[in-house]
Length: 82
Image (tube, rainbow, N blue to C red; front, side, top):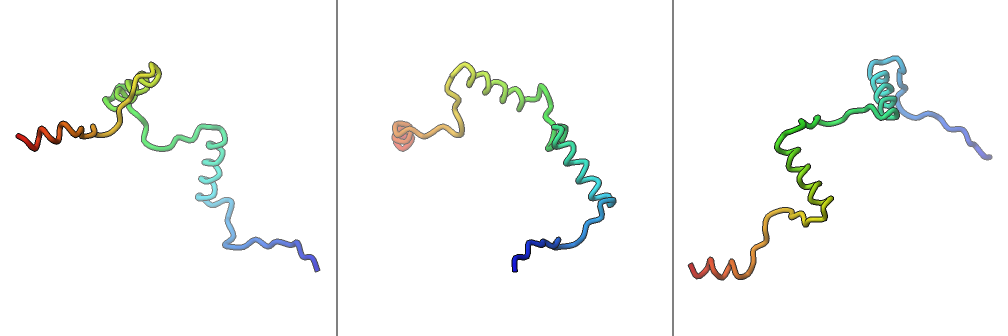
């Protein structure tokens, strides 16, 4: 008694609905590489300049510092004495 029949489970879809058409168009754009997602970046903005400078440093193999500077023990001792 081997039953290999599969039945479609769930709510049926209408391929001519606006939502299904939109999903199909989105899938076609994704396959073609034309799907644009997110907020577009503004060329020449301060943020883009910072990112470009960071990439230039990485390309030149210069150390790129990230985050807040770490407190050095000597700085802490000097602050307590003052």
